[in-house]
Amino acid sequence: MALALVVLAALIHATWNLLAKRAASAGAAFVFAYTAFSLVLYAPWVVYLLWQGQSQWSGPIVACIAVSGVLQLAYTLLLQRGYQVADLSVVYPVARGTGPLMSTVGAFVLLGESASWSKAGGLLAIVAGIVLITTQGSMAKFRQPAAYKGLQWGGMTGVTIAGYTVVDAYAVKVLGIVPVVLDWCACLLRLVALLPWVLRNRAEVLERMRGYWLLAAVVGALCPMAYILVLLALKQGAPLSFVAPAREMSMMMGALLGMLVLREPVGLWRLVGCLTTIGGVLLLGATAH
Image (cartoon, rainbow, N blue to C red):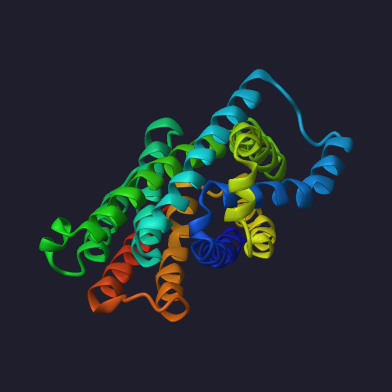
């Protein structure tokens, strides 16, 4: 059941990232817009859960929500900026590869999950895959601005992914917070943080969002659902060291969507890199059950 939830989440995640890439030029304005849509669309579900008393509140829970909100804000802004300056088929796989790499280490160190040689091999395969994706088989690619930008922004995005994934796993597995409530509250913090900038730059925001409102509504519906499914898998008892890497099957989907839909040049080595990273993901999760 956990694997099915994670696979579905991966498909949804790759889809909303494709749509976000189409609105890359809108930048933070698009992040604000789809966050606002998420809050409105998921509010009835959250209100129902709170009314039913299914969510407890405590200092640690509030702290986790605050930290998660800050990290997710950084994640969305870094990702959108990465899509402005580099290809989806570089930024997305690098971000989604480094995220589980670091969150799995966090699961070993902070959550006490067991390590193994197969997991270590999986981590190394993920790193190798990221290198292949970025360089396309030539180390000289590191000297090219496009590949370096993809690596830079994808890597920074991956750091934030690892951070909020570990925090949220602790929140749902140890503190018992309901996944949709956790994600909705983090979205609310993201909206509040962006609101002053939006109010100061209303005309710019409206101009940047011209033609992108429908995309924002669709991303607003898909983005939380992809992550809520992941949190549900964690809440059902699946270890983070399995869920975090397994959900990154979405990076293969993302790279292929970038090639097929956006007509981005992918090439043999980038596909080999995706396959290598996916192999690392499978190896990393092989002994996690």
